[in-house]
Image (cartoon, rainbow, N blue to C red; front, side, top):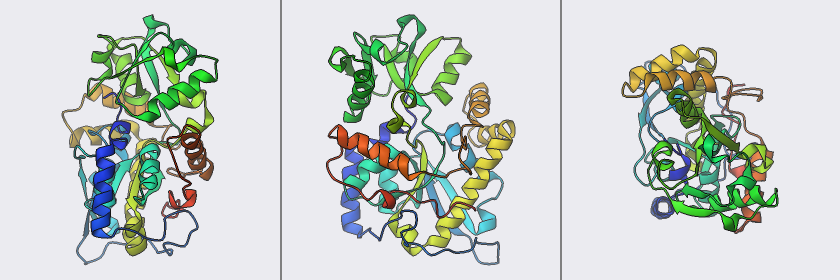
Amino acid sequence: MRWQGMWTSWKTKGIAAAAALLLLGGCGGNGGGEGNGSASPAPSSSASSAPLKEVKVVLDWTPNTNHTGLYVAAAQGLWEKRGLKVEIVQPPESGADQMVASGEAEFGVGAQEGLTMARQQGIPLVSLAAIIQHNTSGFASLKEKNIKEPKDFEGHTYGGWGSPAEEAVIGSMMKAQGADVSKVKFVNAGMADFFTAVKKDIDFEWIFYGWTGIEAELRGIPINMVYLSDFNKKLDYYTPLLETNEDMIKEQPDVVRAFVEGASEGYRYAIEHPDEAADILLKAVPDLNADLVKASQKWLADKYQDDAPRWGEQKREVWAGYTEFLKEHGILTKDLDIDAMFTNEFLPK
């Protein structure tokens, strides 16, 4: 699992399709930013004799420990007690963003980079919670390559997926050390995983340490990691996150609140009981590597909330910082309403 969610976030085809669906369906609203008045406070849903409201949450990739809190919420009835019946589904080729934007799925797992580009396209996705508080992704290479910091990328081959953001990120990190990104060879690695790619002609790739890095540990393969957040504060963005669209916030705030509260309780359980949470994920998805899930879950347990006052909380400066980074590198071509891109409104107090 080379790039657990970012690859699908940048698929231009998916974004374009979502835009078309929005035009046909009239998806829109007044924004979902914190304090923008788009949704009035509502109490949590409680269990009653009324039928459960059926909704979907679409993942960004195949199930993994980024998603554990969702599987805990489903297994422990944390959504049902709030009046929801939530189906967890895997994404189509065009990605989770399209399903959420069109309303085919009420909720999804996304990433700040994909959501930001969607907003530039006029697609009103809104982030509801940061699944992991800090960016745990970075550039991985076999230790024998001796790539320890961005300047060491020179003369090496990077295996990516063809997004303009890749060269911008790598280039900005190298420039800060006086290195030249033109001395990096960029190739499309397709869907090959990290371990397959680095056995061929690729020297480094972009991974989440919490999954691929842990897998390297279990395989006994020494790697070096160059974390984005260590070299540029603006790259310490939210990935992954939970998202919805503005129509859901405007028209069904009680459903949004119930979903976020259930997910929050699920992730808090994963933080406090990583071993038991891993068992829940494995029971739901038995084909996963049990040793990897257990080790990854333990590693992620204190990363979900980290230094935030509560799980899921997002800072405006993080959203503004990454947006500025994209503008600086010509990837984002217009000003965006930062406060409409995220909200903390539905998190439990």
